[in-house]
Length: 358
Image (cartoon, rainbow, N blue to C red; front, top):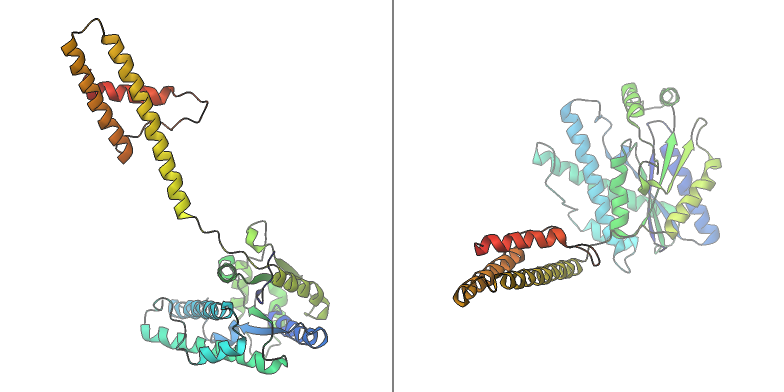
């Protein structure tokens, strides 16, 4: 296991389940732990609700949905850019903030929204909000400027597993820690809590999210193994912090390993080796067939006829080997050592006779 200085912790659950409250408590605990244990953990709260306008709702019309998706895409692009910066050796968060303030922002693909102008506006809004999250977290943390560990608390409904998988991919790309905290909450309880909010969320949004919610489950997706489910029938409080904090610390100690990149050179060597072996065995079989044919013809053909047969057979052999080499002729699977070569030999023998006109 490899430790890391950065961890992405996805906090998911339906609206009004207590995600933001939990993030606040984790941030407070991180601050206390830093003061008492000098662990230098800075919690950065990335709250989708503060970045994506409340007027945009997945349940609304297609235009609203398109903009909603564009905001989400740009948040992931921005987080990718930030993680990439932090992955650079010796780069501190204050340095990253300074660099990003002078940067026009990650530009990724062309905006998915119908209007490129609207897409540019969304990109700029998301960029400013992400920078504000970083700056506010650093200013309000009380930790030293060169804090050694950065904990990103990604706070969103994340009702589809595929939404969370984007952050797992980021963790894998930059070898950061990754974990998930899922808040289990019934639609009825969420609706009750929502009714007491100053800015209520449309009820149909909560109901829709509850029907679509895919909570972390390692049995369905092995990459979700570093997850913890919190039953929030009661309001989120400090009781749930101990197991959640243990999960986060474990994620810091076990960075997601990078995806194994296939060794193309090794693959090419293997393919070349197989091709050479195929040609070698084909050559042996054809030589044997020619020898047997010449032996069978001896005594029944004149010397001139034997020379003609030999010429035809050798010409056919050369044509067959070239066909095998370039892939025009595909014999049955090359037999492993100790296995019968019957199908392989029959195929080549028939080819030899056919091309030699015998």
